[in-house]
Length: 427
Ligand SMILES: [Zn+2]
Image 1: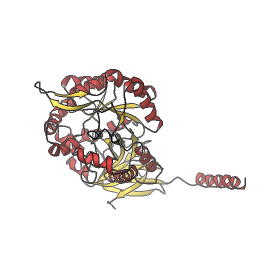
Image 2: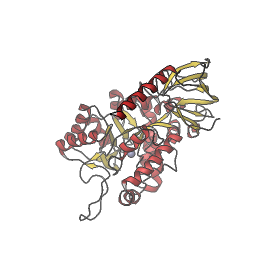
Image 3: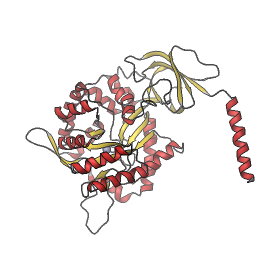
Image 4: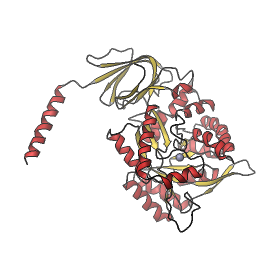
């Protein structure tokens, strides 16, 4: 009883003190501001931050009395970047040997330690938000990484997570081992419509924000020049996954590379198409009409193609052909890289912006894929993705101008997440 009384007194006392103080404010003087929504950058903007949120954004503007000033007057300030397709629990898997070794030789605790390291890398590259699209055999460890970041125990981006992902029995590695051995699987094997609904409920129970499933495998070009694939789930199973997820308020991401896999995922009613190499004109039209997002993950495609050989280069070429078509048709494109499919230490995820510009977007369009459009995909348009009053104070700064040279986004010098500065090389 005595302890409780002390605790209550303390709470009351601390509450009274903080209410009497003026809240801590930070004023950022931005030389050039790309706010994520305006067509043109705003010169000499003042961003006032209180707590973890943006209080105001004004051209020119006066610093409020008592505010801490951060001088970014020689820099370009942008919303924190967002990568909506990552795997923090994976360290690159050009070959199946690399993939198998991670699942067979590394414990999940060890992989979670590397995941925390990867999350830190992402944040230092300016990614203040990621959607992590399955743990590749590390069960629900993404939920733990997300929690440790949210609790301020380790630095990293805000996360939405997909946990284990789904494929039918035998349609996802590890495969090829003796039937006498019980080896881990990179996904949760799910069969039948009841099995699908149960798996969705189970993953949601353990913390999945998204449900991900593998729509296809075995990608191959046929005489029609179209990239085809083998579809994993029956339509009834895929529809059960999507229906159950939507029923309990979760959205669904489908790994879909071949045209058949993309078509099946669209029939099932998914919210995002991952990779989408085999998009045809008709499929793009349908996605544009229904507002379904395409997450192209070009960085990983370009990275694994030389090592994997086979069709992978031709698939990367097809992405390059399809990208400007999709832009023209008005398909919603959100930036996703598949980081983890490449080594986090080797490539900077921000390279994806550069590909989008190379493939026909303006730098401003490309920046939106990894800020405001990504926020929309995540259902966080009211909280993130632009620099404006009421949003989280998630922002980055570069010393160069990304509208002149998009490569500048790979050189983030300043990172703030939720009003806390994690990196500042512009002092
Ligand atoms: Zn992936």
